[in-house]
Image (tube, rainbow, N blue to C red; front, side, top):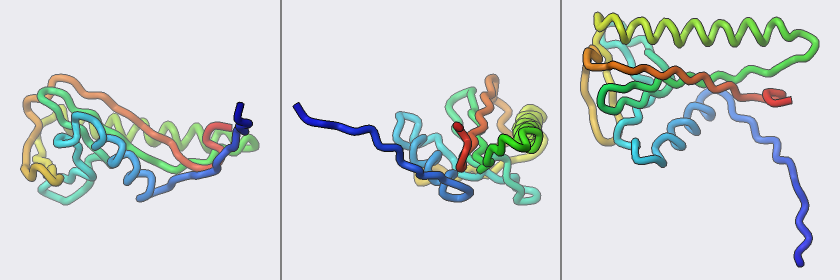
Length: 134
């Protein structure tokens, strides 16, 4: 019988590292050809979201943000979470408006679309950083 110990690994991803991880993880599924990093609007080159998964009539908008929870100031954390939620809802509105074309590129595809065929939108906000789960 081997003796195993539980060891906690403190590995926190922030910013680009966290986005890279989400993109990497997303591409390890059957959806790999439909994962797009940082899709941007054609007209102003502004980012729609950090990672988008576009499959048939469904789009998943994923936002990644480092946000440390401070038990002495929970309102700051809640304010940041609310801000992220509002940003995702804004991205959802822009997709539903079909007014602006987005540029989606990955190793499989590169195209511009107004996402007119989207019928389902899922919003995912991922928080990363020290203290996130404490």
